[in-house]
Image 1 (tube, rainbow, N blue to C red):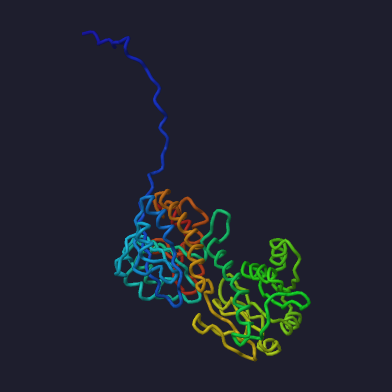
Image 2 (image 1 turned 90 degrees about the vertical axis):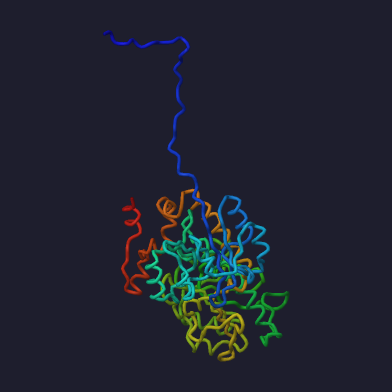
Length: 404
């Protein structure tokens, strides 16, 4: 039997097909929970209503605990209008697969954490407890810290904006405590015609130091900056665009400058561990009565030997006739501005996580974000924490490479 011949019809035509491209999975829908912070003196909120509105209009779900934004003067009504679901039960908000917090995880949060949850929050290394880390490991948490989170330019955006706020606030605080109404010396911070300018000594030329210097110069004060890192001092001059008196940390020169200043700011910090103490009690005792010390480094132990932790409620104490202001977490005192700054970093990040198809995909593609991950699905990926608490360390890059 003859094989059937193929039939060619004149009405039949060959057409090119459109090329099919490899398309990323469509964005993951996120469910984000914003609990009310119960940590000591935490007034900030991690996402403001405007940011929630953007997330909701992109198809994400946001659950906000009642009064979560109250300390930053954001009402439940504003969150509800932005499309968030307001809940009164803390356990309810803690069920969200992604938690966005403006304070570290506290004792009370631990029982409420869910398996395989993602937490974006600060970490506060100095106050960290081993039990907290172990509990989070048990629950296979993925945790991203504000402090180590990097952006595409290689800088730490949240740390930077909080440091800018602290630096800018320092001179406002100094001005307040130099006035006669606050039992200060009655000196105007800055300079007026015919009167020698107020002397300000700033120890540390990082971001806090830079913004404190900017504000002091803008007020007309005479500023002297100390740092052990000559490169930082050069960078400070470049960023300010003008020459400013700088010196490396030489105790005799420092003591001499502190003796005649009205304001001394401590803004030195180490990458890890305690801030170095560079001003001795003897140097403080030689300072002018009524002058003020603002120790911004108190979060990490402080750079003045006489510094002791104070609170926003009673921010100062006097020792050797010198006013000491040692409030940790200064940005929390300017909570609304700080919340806006944090929110403007987190909201685009959450949208990117969604576009990539979830946190795991985002970490896979984003090297900068990996820096901020200190726990990945319960594995501790921060070397410093693992050493501090003698816990097993796992390299995040290996974890990601072995996924599948």
